[in-house]
Length: 124
Image (cartoon, rainbow, N blue to C red; front, side, top):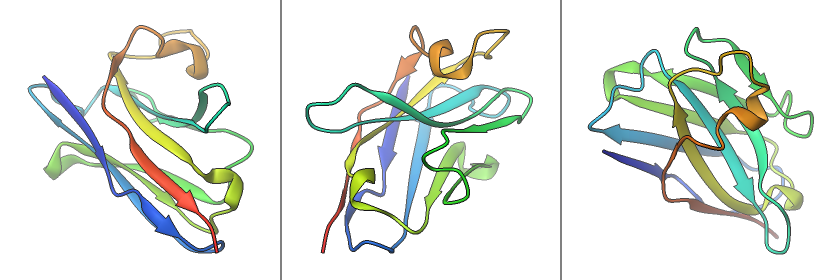
């Protein structure tokens, strides 16, 4: 089983990036997939997730700027990031869990399957 996040890079403030979380060995369709990030010197924080029933959640800090969705034919989940800010700079990770169940989404992935991260740098 492999989970790979890609699409990071350097972008100017106000710019956009599209991250992809691609899986092999598991079928992401119908599973809960989360995006988390960790900035230098800071704790890991939840960014967004799509639950097994396709219910979507966003952190307040990215609401109306980021969009999560499934790319079913590619067995992947994307995170479209628009209007990026310097404070969005971090390593972004995707994580898979069977379902959130009744657990708050930011806590539900603690025991999930984590992929390697991709670095997003927002700077002029």
